[in-house]
Image (cartoon, rainbow, N blue to C red; front, side):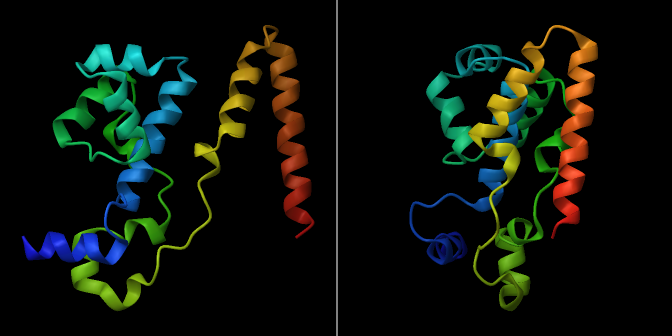
Length: 153
């Protein structure tokens, strides 16, 4: 029991583990990309929409069987929920803290752009474009603009 308390103390009482926040943001991302409401997802796995909200915020930890259910309903492999996890987040697990406490440092990284509201709105607007040729042109233009911005650094 002391170990769990130590981990909570290091990140602050009541604060979710950054790994849980990352996994929750990936659940939200996939649900939103599918155009699925929190209510519909909750019904599919036997939860209320409030429980889904807590999972998506990382406020409640998702158990392995529930994560498996989510992967089936959202049609992604379980590994999807851990993709694009920054090293700074991965190092925040209790096991990492015990074994590599000096390397963990503070949790300080840029927020995942995939979890931002702007990204979700952009994806929704993109998929509302009915003409696949127009969508493809917009996609190519966005890639070109992104490459130009990277070259400016």
